[in-house]
Length: 223
Ligand code: SAM
Image (cartoon, rainbow, N blue to C red):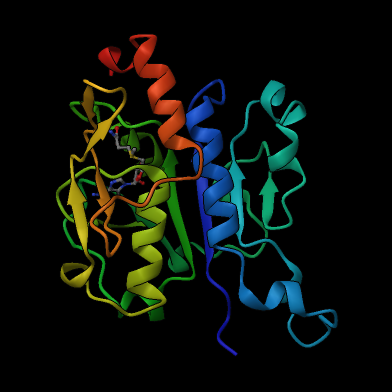
């Protein structure tokens, strides 16, 4: 059996926005190894029962008050430690998903890297390069193409490339989709998403409702 890959989101905000909570829940669920629910005997492969989604650098206040859905998720390891302190992590096996990296991610990277690190930041328009805060660790960087993605999309695309071995240019994308937020209004999301067969963007469950709510509050104008 292939060793499971680990996905790390280094949380870079002080608080946990409702958007990030939905993204993190989605990542925890999507990255859960199929075998983790089935395996009861871990003696031959301890990775089977270990979470593969790590949420690192949580401020104490947030760590101690993590929403129940996240705290109770079987595939979430939440910690106040920085990513480089994670148990079993070897720097040469770590890839930083970096929109400014020189090389794009390719399926062969799945043979080299076991850990994939992402910035736990809400996207901004135009992008402010907050991923820069993660370059201090010196991990090898890879880009997922030139367009900014949400964090859950970046994890989804990484998995398609390194686990499903789909080259980046074969992943179906939809850029800057328009969402209908009321009868007469639409809003454009300034991100790239993975496209479903029906042409709609894959988003965390509950995200469209949240976008509608925030949009009515004028929140999206601040992005
Ligand atoms: N505006 C952002 C910034 O300041 O860097 C991008 C943040 S994006 C919402 C969150 C994370 O997803 C990034 O830190 C990065 O790890 C990953 N990501 C998003 N788009 C990416 C891309 N095109 N290539 C590589 N990583 C990407």
